Image 1 (tube, rainbow, N blue to C red):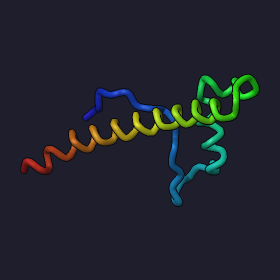
Image 2: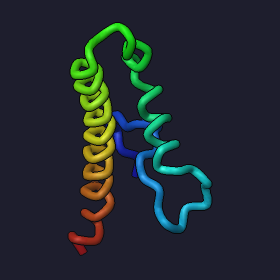
Image 3: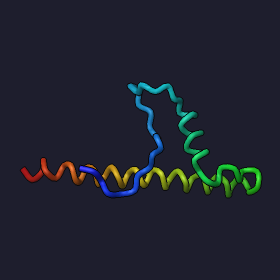
Amino acid sequence: MPVDLLDTPHQSFIGSGSNRSVSREGIVTILQTAWKGHASRQHITEDEWITGLTQHLKTIVNLRITHVSEWLDQNSSAILSS
């Protein structure tokens, strides 16, 4: 059953059995450069830049958590009601 909520296309987890050869640093770089404020690093204070990046990453994580939680609710309801 599809979930009708916003989700993120970003990969934020690399499991030990992953077929991809992407490092943690590579994933962080991809997530960081996806942030619209990424290029502003030389024009704002370090604290402002880190705060903006942190908010961007929290938004991605929260979108994913909400999406997965809704998926679990929808797909486990049939099992729980039987």
